[in-house]
Each structure stands twice: as C-alpha cells, then as structure tokens.
Length: 142
Image 1 (tube, one colour):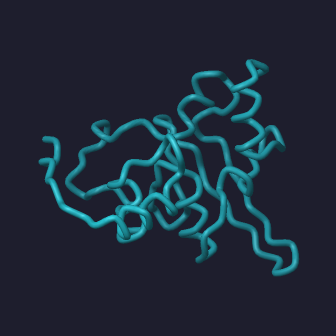
Image 2: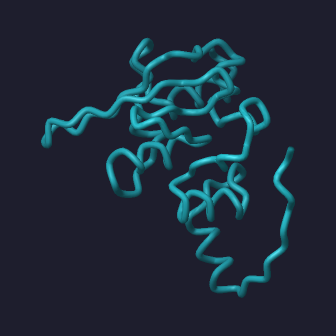
C-alpha cells in the first residue's frame, strides 16, 4: 500500500535551502528532506518492488551498468575504500544494508560528509565514474 501524501507549508528560506541541497531535475523536495533527515532510507513500510526506480536505472537500461556491479570510492590519503552495489531497480546498496536511490546520499552515508557520488563513485567493471557513464549515455555513446 502506498504511503499517503501530505501537504506542508514552508517559507521561502526553507524552500531555498531545499533547492541548494537538491540534485537538479532529479530530486523532489521530499527526496531532499528524506536524505537530510533520514539518510535517504526508504520507509520500512514500503514493500519491495513498490519503490520508484533508482537514478542508475537509465545506465542499466543502456547496458552501461548491470545489477550486482560494484561501485568504489577510494580516499587515497586516508587509505579508505568504500564499496557499494547496484541493485536491479537502479538503487545503490551500501554494506550496512541501507539502500539509496541516488549516488550522492549513498556515498555521504559512507564517508560522513557531502560528496558527489556521481563524480566519486567508480564503476568497478568499467573503471569510469558514474558521471562519465551518465555523460556517455547523454551523448548516445554506450
């Protein structure tokens, strides 16, 4: 069963804050609030299969990424490596069991600060960043 939709009133300052923390043309205000307040987690009452497709789905559909592929972010100076897995519906699973629709909140949950998951996650099989894969898709060059 889908979650009921609710309406809230926000002032211009709060709306501007949501805009500054959104991924343009991807995030809804609810996505931003979920990421900031709940670390991007989907509701526990959201049954498997009823969630929207993740941001990596276009890359999967184009054959640039496959479900089960690994993503990696390495902090060379600190000698930390973070990994994640692409799900069949285009989400990102991180090792602690949380799943994220977008790469940046997933990587933030791992490293502890705002970082572009598109620019920093490397798709292990191809060696390209998610941003590079997205650019290939936009250019029509899979």
